[in-house]
Length: 315
Length: 76
Image (cartoon, rainbow over all chains, first blue to last red; front, top):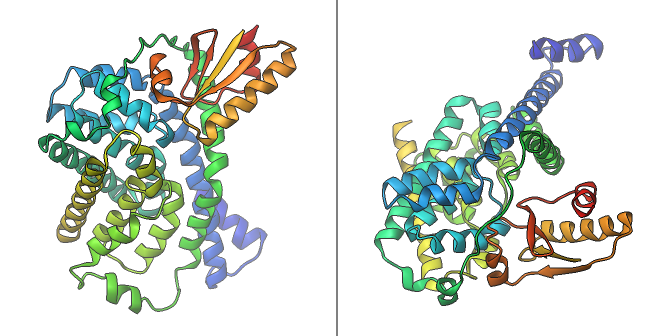
């Protein structure tokens, strides 16, 4: 139905030739833009309502009853639905370890939360289909579980900044919001999020639409194509210093996929950008000593590379 | 009245601070508004998602930027 509307507008109202590259691109662009913004608005709103039932406080309660392994899996899954902003990473980290949640389980949460989120899911789903969206979620959760278990096994508690263990977290006395207030919060959140990310989304869709017949891909493919065994680690190394949210990275991902890069390589790049960054390192330095911080980055990078190879092999 | 804006200095915390000031201005109330960036103090309130708004020692909002209208409502 949306496709008909776009066709109508471009080919009938504007009178463009359906066979011309420009007409085709414009049709594609309008259709995708409308589709993705409809998806974004609906799903971000619904997810925001769901999230209001998974406060960090509740997640902490659930996780504090679970030990390793089960805890890592739960933490990675809860990371998807618990609202998280990198600016809250420090209080969240302290709150978690103080309540007795194992370090590795805390990391599983800290890894999955920024990396796997509804915006990434919707953009991938809308632009590349549900298969790739599902693969991204599954691989994000896998990376979070694996890296969390490894960090937990390394028993690095002494590399947490000493003051963290001395902090006494006060009893949380925040009132549960009423259902009506939750709906209002979800609406506010959806509006402010869309306001923030819409330019990235439009650029991403635009790139996708107009890149179709774009120039030879030889160079990129020679260096990052399926034939180069080092493509995945290189993609991750390039991705780490880049800092972007899921919406911002999609234009680049779109371009890379169009150029024919294998899916595992592209997903590894996207995960490296969203999960690891310098600003995040600076924030986490407040609670982690250098050695644990380096271990965290190293473990996550290796886990992402493993998952990247895995998907390049099986798909 | 004492209002504390908890947060480790991110953009959202600054916005909440500004909103609080404006809410005071609009409602014609006077209060001492302070930014709390010190982590142990933030944790003392049991807050895990910043920014948070504390009025007279009570956590009123956590994990979101309250709008000016909301804060006016909280203060009355």
